[in-house]
Length: 538
Ligand code: NAP
Image 1 (tube, protein in one colour):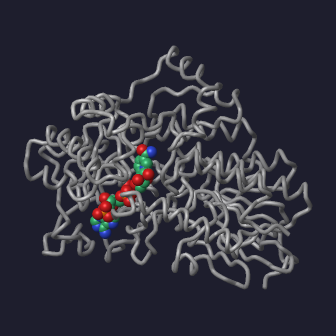
Image 2 (tube, rainbow, N blue to C red):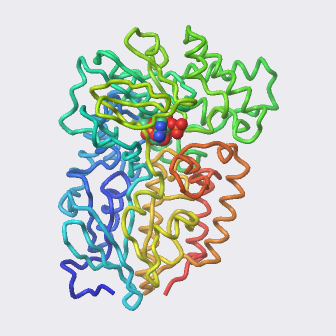
Image 3 (cartoon, rainbow, N blue to C red):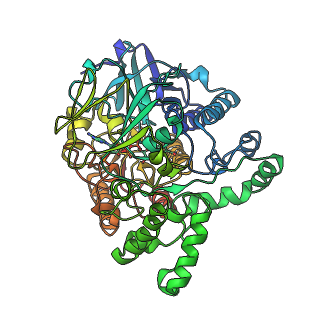
């Protein structure tokens, strides 16, 4: 057992991660007078928006709902230039937050938490960093983000490639020179799509390796002038009152009832929402598409029709239009001229379904049938070990030496995504079984979770509790409720990172709580009001 004597630092709370959740968590706990510090692998703040600096990275939540709502001044003193701004602007906004709240002095950058061990006798954690620091802390709060463990060592032979190979979320800060190069992109999720449509003009030759296509929705991204900015800022109160209670933490909710409309009426609604150029077709049209196979098929066919109209070649239609899963059961990407890219003479879609990538060789990508695609640059837009990966890549040991990595390799369980039985005084955000594991406007959900954690710690201190642990019974009840809700949703029937099926051997479970952001908020609040029902306080 580690002991506190070896510690270089003693804290009330140690937060892992300086992204959207970690920054606000630090601010709140510092306001409570806690001795709190953030540890962050990156060299600056930003989390997702620090790491994902690949070409084309941008929001697809409207910028004005992706902000913190706890301070009107903080909200209104920042102005966005577009409806869906790009990564450099978002990163600047995160710097603005860190500066305004004077957060950097309590953050250790370029420092990675390597292990954390709970000491039952003391009710405290010993945390070790890869750089050799040892910290003794009462609370361990994980703000690691849901998509921060990249799947980057996927193919044999990667290290032998003669050219440059990048995973999108580890894009070099100094940028990458793609001009005039033969570039291959593996992966056509939301990331791959943004990369492909952005680099197409720059590269000499583009090979897109396509395994599972996505339903694509054109983004409408107007620039904002002063009047637009003033107009959204005027909505601050309304947004503050609305966002926490909708199904997805966006400003809109499902507005229409499928059965109430005629076929023409439904079509009208779909056309109108499609024209909005946002995620509304997914998150504010017909909730029935998630539960009813027939509705799902009709909405899917509507989107397929739109995609077919943009693709002139039947072979491209076959490769790029999804047929075997329903619209919205994968994360829906917004795009700009993505499908049109494939009509360009220097672009080739390489289908992987029947002929997967066998390995990377020094010259490029080798397929199973022996075809070699010679390349100068390979871009892996191959996604993440979502929800769990950030924590299982740290050696976290709870009560009796149990390992979170081993526990979650058997079954991914949490209590409301806020705690895990067997890991006292560890409080979590953006982990499975909460909306923040996938299905929400992240800032809405992360604000709610970090506020819940702050209030929990305040309550413990006010009532002289030193330790909080999710009970086995409480966790069983939450997992059962989560599964019941998830199993009714067609998301559970399809393969994607939403169900963990993108990582070999990962236990299958819908990662996100699908009961809705508003309902989740209410349930977590009820537990707190009932004296932290489902938790043992001692
Ligand atoms: P992803 O959705 O998991 O997509 C990964 C892609 O890589 C898929 O096309 C996958 O194909 C492919 N792939 C993985 N392993 C492969 C292999 N061995 N051979 C061939 N292809 C392989 O990951 P992502 O695109 O990075 O997106 C993850 C999430 O990040 C999104 O869903 C979204 O939530 C978030 N994101 C948000 C934005 C934004 O606009 N705000 C932008 C980008 C990403 P299969 O599907 O066949 O496995």
